[in-house]
Image (cartoon, rainbow over all chains, first blue to last red; front, side, top):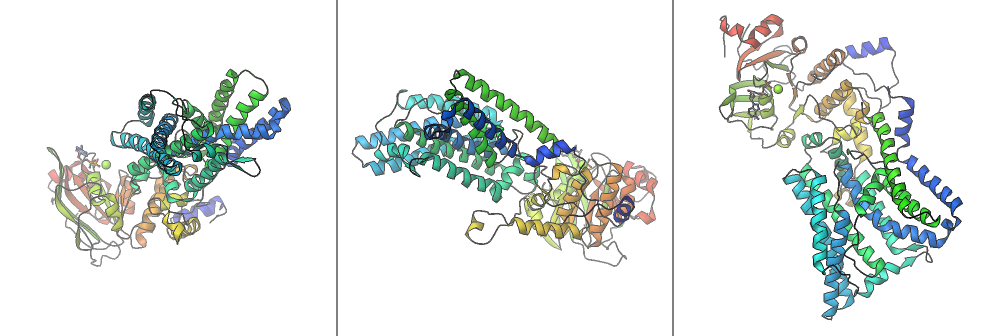
Length: 352
Length: 270
Ligand SMILES: Nc1ncnc2c1ncn2[C@@H]1O[C@H](COP(=O)(O)OP(=O)(O)O)[C@@H](O)[C@H]1O
Ligand SMILES: [Mg+2]
């Protein structure tokens, strides 16, 4: 229903009949432009980075560089997918990197023990992977329950579980790696399709992004996720069970951390107790660069994929251009701040 | 000036069966009597004003009817049947919708998403089981619903955050009118709006009631109450002390009841 703007006199007549006038755009042109292009500006940034680094280091356009970049991105992308749901609710999951490490160690420890007691590799893989996912879901459940029942801020709760889970990870195998893993898991890390161009872990990460992207933008669950982040009271008043929804969102983040734990283990053919450490910072950065608002209610999976791409290209690009590794973090930090600054402009264009 | 309970419709005064009745409702918060033995009824098509000083118990009464609060004693009847709402969802399922002063809409969601939040339509078949939204159906239904209440929004896919305060409140009223089948409760729906916007929402309330859906309106804006309402109920320290018709009183008369002066100077009380 797009009603043309009636002239002022006609408007008065409508009002007299009990009508309210149509929405008028009083927002400045620039801000409206920023709002409309949405996550696409980040796509432009990614393109510029690919071109710029390609000029500085032409090896960026090789198969090896693509495989390195995409494989590097896998764990961050999977964490960022869950983080997108969490951030859209106006929450944050600082524990997802730690959850990755813990679930990888727990599942691998089980697999190693099963192999030692002569259980077949297939069964060991199946049970071990199940444990990784369940462990992730369990930590997410704990986060969600503390946040909704004890009513503590997500930042504090997940900072606590980050610390506790990191400690628990070291307890699992006295802080040492687990390398005796079933063949299925180690093969998963090297399997690929499209004559070597698409590693299976990358394929899994992209498939998850599509699946959870549709879940966020096209389902009732996704719509309510935005509603909670946009105005929690309104969601409650509309009959949404906000607490249960939030618990599920943190469980999604946890399960995905378990998936990431599996793929990192597969990639290195080993589970390391330090796997996933500090990953949450990259995951959060990817989501924010992708245009999600840390105040909730906004963000897209498309943006998150691009945001992860920017971090990955920045990292590989700086390595290929022989820049000192410390600069990677400086550059990523600068991009995060730039992204939030742009988000500010867009947010101001949006509300009131 | 009369204080007799009249279960009559607002148009023409022909006797009509009340849709919502409140019988002997009291609410205590510890030693505070927020409501004392309140009786009232709302009939189809009526706009009933509920006025009273701060703390008189207006919000408490509305929240009880809306299912957000349980009364200490007394009962609520909908279409003559006793109901025992355990939550606002129960009340909504019974056809009772509430419009709040603010915080009722999600600014980042579109108009149609706000209209359907909590009652989303999903597609048929297996995709429906996972909650796949029927976006087209909801958008179309939104256009129809808003047109019926003669609310004009440039597009139902606009984000609500882009609308003016008055338009947002119009969307909230439109949502209530679209889903409500018994009564719409409004707790100071225009308190956050400018004068012009208040007036437009007032017109909208009349439109809604003219379709047969009664409205219970709490407002501090007495001229608006006087203009929009068919009956005006006055709460004073938790008691319903007057049931006035605008044509039988004036603004000073209402103010007299609100401050309790009318009661002291010999007006009959309930
Ligand atoms: N949750 C509560 N706990 C204790 N007292 C309350 C509570 N809610 C309201 N009251 C008291 O009940 C009385 C009526 O309040 P309310 O219904 O909000 O009045 P109104 O909406 O007319 O301003 C006031 O004295 C208020 O202080
Ligand atoms: Mg009140």
